[in-house]
Length: 138
Image 1 (cartoon, one colour):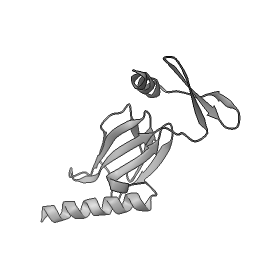
Image 2: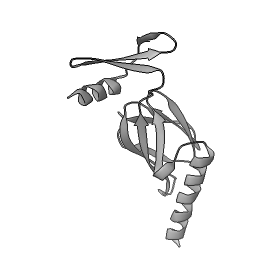
Image 3: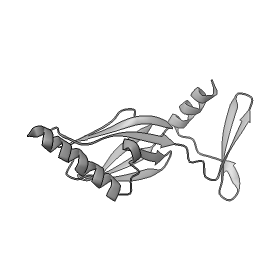
Image 4: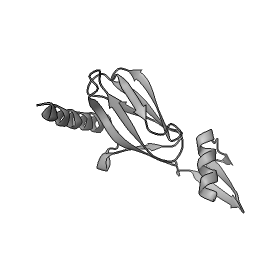
């Protein structure tokens, strides 16, 4: 009986993600770096875990709403449990760079990202993005 309940919970959570406009294709939640995405839950959450907080961060808006923010590009996971410890969400979070209106300039081993909206200027890089860029260059 518990197995049916857990399966129904996963289906309800997937429907909640789809209705909230969260891209959940192939079990992924897609987020653009330095942008936020709203995740609506089917029932109140008790515990929220992000696998790698350098890639994504989850902030609780209320008991059924999570704000998921992309911090560094890569893949991590999001697990949300209810008060009984049953999963509401157990999904892969894929954070990608916002390539729209950006230009990357490579000068030997240095990388500079410019935001071109409408004039090109140095884009803000958070700590996670600096670490990501240094790893990509090696």
